[in-house]
Image 1: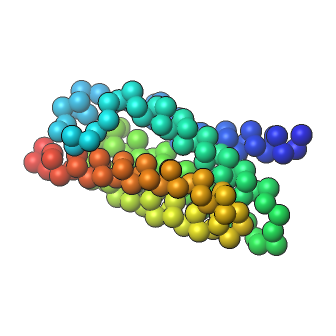
Image 2: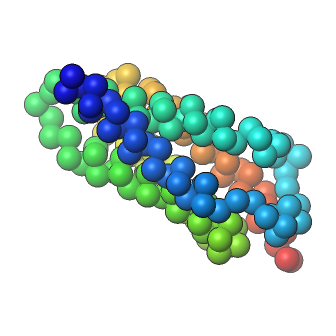
Image 3: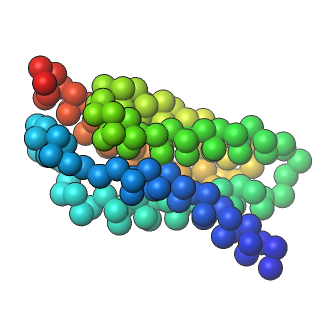
Length: 155
């Protein structure tokens, strides 16, 4: 039962960045921006992020329950940092209408994900691998963010 509570806690923690995404939505400003031809329709983001957040929670759970003599505090800290960066991206991009600052945020997020993967791998290889789809999606989102900056540089 203890592990079930831990799994639920890890899943709840993983979904916390979604709160900022629910608080700020694309609006007329966002709709007026030029975007990459590869920009997916808006309905794609919710199901993709739902799967990714669930995967994040499972990865963190596997990291937490892995039996090892390794101290897990650094891995937990960088995991929390990447969640914070994830949650702030929507606020920076949509609320502040600051795509360039959001691009910096998402680059820092990608770096934090890689560091998290390295820390997790030392304890649980499966936990690290579970973060790979997240890294790929954030890489794609970084490209989309960059293209918005590039295509709207005079706006």
